[in-house]
Amino acid sequence: MKSELILNLIKNFIVGGFTIATTSYLATYLSPLLGAIFWSYPLTILPSIFFMKSEKKSNKTIAKFLLGTTFALFLLMLVTFLLSHHISETKENESLWIPIGKATLGFIFGSFVYYFIIKIFKLEKYFI
Image (tube, rainbow, N blue to C red; front, side, top):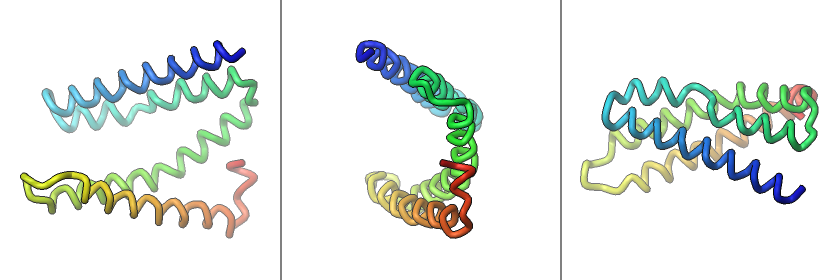
């Protein structure tokens, strides 16, 4: 059982690495737009849902994960926008860590807002 778990995690790692490497190559050497379009296909979600299934999670649980991910895309859009904005305001010779830190703070704030919206409007049954 434990070796199967490790094997599934290794498969997820390989798919994730392939996705990052391909996106990086496309965005750097062909076109940032092509990289973004390739990245938008949820390749990294596919191994996650197969992993959940192999761990005996029900289709209903997997569907709730995907629904939560769908609405969390608003959070992804916010953080990606913040990264774009802060990086565009950074001088060429400066590190990217400051803009990444600022976008991370936006992510933390947005995560709390997302979580509390779900709680305040009692939408947990759709996500949990």
